[in-house]
Amino acid sequence: MNTPPAKTPDLRADAAWVVFQILEHGKSSRDCLNTVQLRHAPKDRAWLQEMSMGVLRQLPQLQLWMRQLLDKPLKGNKKIVEHLIMLGLYQLAFSRVSAHAAVAETVNATQALKAPGLKGLVNAVLRNFQRQELSQQRSEDPRIQAGLPKWLYKMLVADYPEHHQTITQAMNTVAPIWLRINRLKVSREEYLQALAQVNVKAEAAPHHPDAVILHTRTDIPGLPGFDEGWFAVQDGAAQLAAPYLQPAPHERVLDCCAAPGGKTGHLLERQPDLAHLLALDFDAQRLARVSENMQRLQHQVTIQQGDASMPESWWDGQLFDRILLDAPCSATGVIRRHPDIRWLRNKADIEQLVLLQATIVEALWPTLKPGGTLLYATCSVLRAENTDQMRKFLARHADASLQPLTDAETPECPGRQILPGEQQMDGFYYCRLIKSHNTEPRLQSE
Ligand SMILES: C[S@@+](CC[C@H](N)C(=O)[O-])C[C@H]1O[C@@H](n2cnc3c(N)ncnc32)[C@H](O)[C@@H]1O
Image (cartoon, helix red, strand yellow):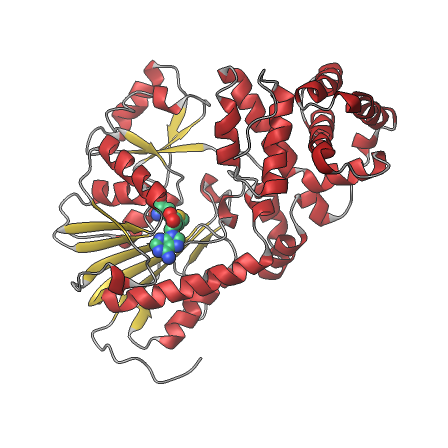
């Protein structure tokens, strides 16, 4: 990770740096924000995040305005100033920052970006934007209004001819914070009372027995019972995995692609009497976070590093009763939480991911007991990763059948697709498969 622009932290220079790192160097927003946020006071950290993520949500419109206002693109080490200009435009067009502060402070940030020679240019661009009242001139192109790259917009239109507009609107809203209450430690009612005592507004989520939705944005580690493991932060859609898998006492369960362990913790809270729970992931750094999270929640679990597509390298040969496969995916269902995802992925990545998901589910199927359950999950809204993936799997395996999660499912259209915003949840997909006792594969091509 490159170092932030100036020794003396400047809020706007740091926000421009975050956007620059994501768009020009393909870094994740989490890493970039972690690098600069601690340089600022808590209230400014929230501002930094809101502004830099806002620029990513409105990027196509901001780029359009910038091209109208700049004679020629800035190159080399001046490129970061384009990102500062977009931050200035964002403040003027989309935020409640006063126009005076937006212009003056954005112009001043050129100093921290070591580009004082471009002060005049930034000032002229922002003042022309105001003078020409460009914020009133928004593109009528629905793709630009949706704030998405062309490839993703096209895929959503093809997958959801009737609902794509609702989906893209939901992708540009700010997601609520959901907590999962560890009911081995505290009841949901007790926890709501504990929150009320520290003036944090929250509600019990109506369709999720373990969930609380916060109405006050707050510092999570400062909430009651954090160190004691009374809760974990987890979206409502992700909280469906454990009830959908429904592990029974004394079963052997594989939590595949487990890191950072969000669903691992919930499986153990729902069923503390498992014979064995193996949390597998191939990313050692992310696995370290599984350990930390399980320690805080006080759960016992076997953690193993391994490639899910090669069970021969980690499997002990004992069949699993249940498998949760939380497959690597495009994460297009969680774009409202991570606006950078839309700019970090491309169409070729989706094709690669679809292949990887198919390879992993194929490799895991022989490790499941006849009569066992496999729950396939992604935080994607793309059909290629979800219904298409599972439809093809069912067609390839005569010993696989669908155990529906909704009334609408058929083998041609398997699984439950949750769209972002539905019951306040992230976009997610679940499909539950049962393995029959007849394990002969069907001799039939698709
Ligand atoms: C969607 S995340 C899992 C989230 C996790 N289940 C939770 O609830 O916190 C997908 C995970 O798949 C892991 N992964 C990707 N490819 C893998 C592979 N071939 N074998 C094992 N894990 C893999 C990634 O490291 C990542 O942690």
